[in-house]
Length: 237
Image (tube, rainbow, N blue to C red; front, side):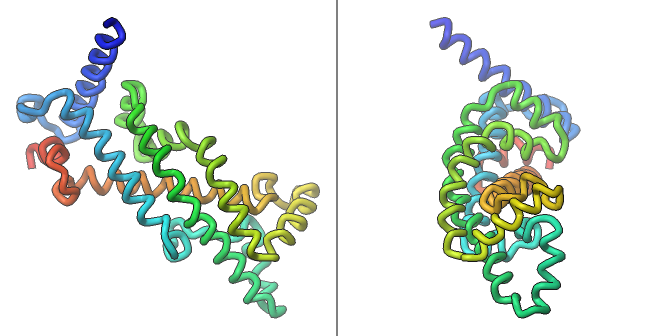
């Protein structure tokens, strides 16, 4: 019984916090949001994040989701991107292009595996999470998802990234070369393993696009086809 009361109280506080933040962000009085309950407000924030996750996964988890998007396209690590320009002059263009394509294809294949974990993070949001998202600035959504899901998603992504990059012989050669270079301080340790590098960049891109989608949905709630978002974020327009 006490647990149910606690959960109800927590949900009420969560919704009240969101409602007050919406009022402040839109320069509205709470009176102008008449009919919007704490439950509506709490569900509204979660709906935005869920839609952001779904849209981001759909956008990135397909052919050319990373490779065709300059904002998240994954380059060769560190200074090797510059070295690749020289290698192209020695007839290595095809291999370099294959590696870059494989890097991005691996990220595209891994991203759909993260959808359920990301949505679960939204469902488990608490009042403190909401506070950080609502007051944390432009990177708050990215920070929230990274804090909640980066480690488990890394573990999920790495096997598929390994599988995809094994198809390109140059991937193994890169790991051997970069590992030696890292020992001399020429490559960052985080970039010395190609598969771990891809996994990290895939997560960075995923979190970035979720944040972009969240802003897009919040700024144009009518386009989301969600009645609760139109009710809350369309108030005063």
